[in-house]
Amino acid sequence: MSKERGKRIAIGARPPANPQAEAWIRQGDSADLQKGDLYTARLTLDVTPAMRARIKVSAFTQGVTVAELLRALLEREFPEHKP
Image 1 (cartoon, rainbow, N blue to C red):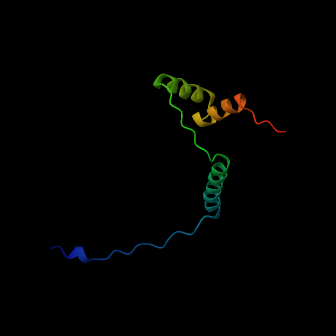
Image 2 (image 1 turned 30 degrees about the vertical axis):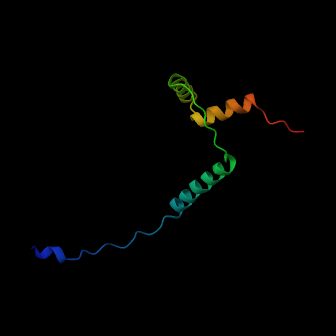
Image 3 (image 1 turned 90 degrees about the horizontal axis):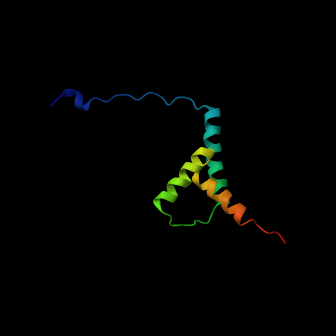
């Protein structure tokens, strides 16, 4: 047995918090919560692998996510009618 096995190593003090970094982290949390509040229903749709590929390529070339692309398409096709 080695004598170094029982040796304790001190861990340094935690670095001081960076207020700007903390604010940035909290900002990301609130953005996620707002997004979750907006989109609370999930829709599942079966498509062919070829259709899925075309959708993904189209989203990529437009610089948006697949979800954003499909939400915009559905919004155009099924606009909200206000009385």
